Image (spheres, rainbow, N blue to C red):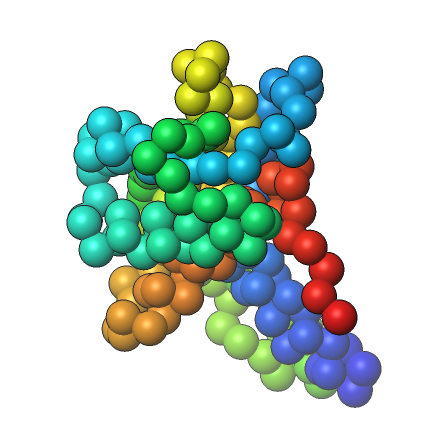
Length: 181
């Protein structure tokens, strides 16, 4: 019985942390040699169409730039790849059944939470990062990240979440950061 009481909070924390994670996916042209790319620039026409605040755009682009520079790329007026982004959001609802019992004694005598239904509403954001071969004018790589967005009470938390989105997506990019000792 004591083990059950100790496990319940741990399971609840694991479930909550799973809801807050960022899911990532990627798609790319398998015939592309990504090591041939050495320079990049941002594709202004595509980025200007994204319907998020200019502050958020700058946060995302700053994160992408840092990730590319860490991989040995340099920003250029005559780039090998063009980087574009797209973002969207939607309202989500999770419904949890809290009709469980634990504690002491037999039904109808128990110690535990009031049974019922819990409803959580949140905004799910999706960020697309596109790398376009500048010479071929073709999409070479696309990374996608989706996760819960909160109404952040501090700019630092919002910046950290956007940095996390970019880092998680870029983990799937074929050219990895060099290992530091």
